[in-house]
Image 1 (spheres, rainbow, N blue to C red):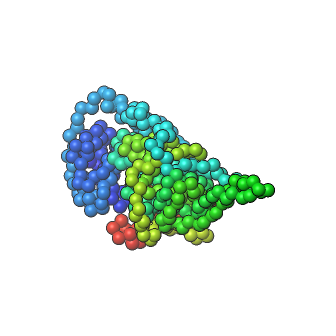
Image 2: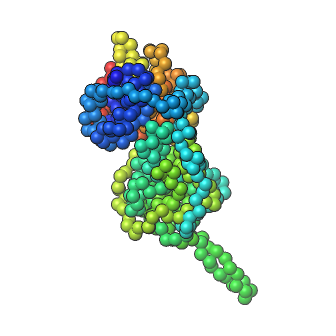
Image 3: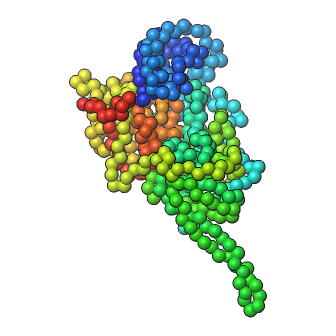
Amino acid sequence: MIHSVREVGQRALLIEVTAEKDHPALMAQLTEQPFTGQIDAIPGVKTALVDFRRRRDAQAALKQAKRLKLRRRKVAPADEAAGDEAFAGERAGATNPAVDRPTPVRPEAQIPQAYAPALALQPREAVVEVLPAPDGEAYGQILVQDMGRYGLGARGVGRAGPADFSAARQANRLIGNDDSAAVFEIFGGGLSVRLCHTSILAVTGAEVSLEVITREAAPTSRGGTEVAQTTERTRTAPGRAPFWVFPGEVLHLGPQQRGVYSYLGISGGLEAPVVLGSASTDTDAGIGPAPVQVGDRFGLAGAASRFVGIASVAPTPLPLPQEATMLRYVPGPRVEYFGTRRASTAGLARLEGQPWEVMAESSRASLVLDGDDPIRRTQPEALPAEPLMRGSICITDSGQPAVALAEHPVTSSAPVLGVVVREDLSLAAQLPRGAEVRFQAVDPETLGPVRTR
């Protein structure tokens, strides 16, 4: 039977059954008769997270879900064993010391061996080549990312995709690509690439210096003998705007000056191995193209366009230096785990009532925060593993919040106090170590502030 149906964030529902034995019937119902607009149904131990395309689809499904009549079905032994394996990690209480919360569980038995980390693709015709870092500089993590994998939550596969999906989408739109075209994601350092063909490029996300270096032969005469020499010219390229790079020229991105993740898009999109329907690299699960290395060469996945977009398309925000960044969130679904009889929203008040500092342990998986006044849990009983969605504010055993980002665990036993709204997720990903964060509860429909005290 259905025990409860809770709204999660702006357009998702968390459906909970009365007993664990009812869960297979719930997942069968969601698979065979999905709700209108349903794009994914991710199983927990006693719950299922149903994600929708639009908020109005989630609102319509809310009433229907409360009236669901489940028919218990016999579960084949093989399926039951697979389900036990899927949640073995959570029930054992495995933790990640960096964020003090359950690690992601991805049932490898359900992922074919062909989807192991992909080898570097040998392009039909190389268009861009990754060069060594200039003297005195070092590369950080460089990945290939598209918009990620959708609809695979039931198989234990997360969406991944770019940490700042708004910036990645903006890079593609500026150069005439489809939103889903693969781009470079650069974290913790710069990048130098040589172009083999005339190309239109765009760099978005974190603020970086952009230089295009042209080397030309300049023969000179010494004592009547011609000596081959090379001259070097440098021009500045604009950020968040399309620009041309010609054959043999080198584009150099400096280290991030404001923000964390930069995105380099090339007209036509990067050619990269497609794994489970996506060219996105999921470093946590080891799925997708291998991290980019010096010497890698990439072709184009599609035809290069001569279209140049409008520089102001889809502007993406960056945190302001020396200022606290406000992240808006929708309370729930597990507010009661931090409330009291007299103050049911005590956890929300503590979340909003103090500044939080971004810690060095933050990554593509989560934004790890630390504050002076931990959020105390008032319900001691363990929470059976539940599905997570991007933006979930998980409260760790130490009472500190961690915001789920691109490579968040598929499920977790850490109660979720709220969900950061989609409009602020890209901003959250761009917060550097030491940045100050505050939270503001908002209405999921209007995004207007709501009182939680």
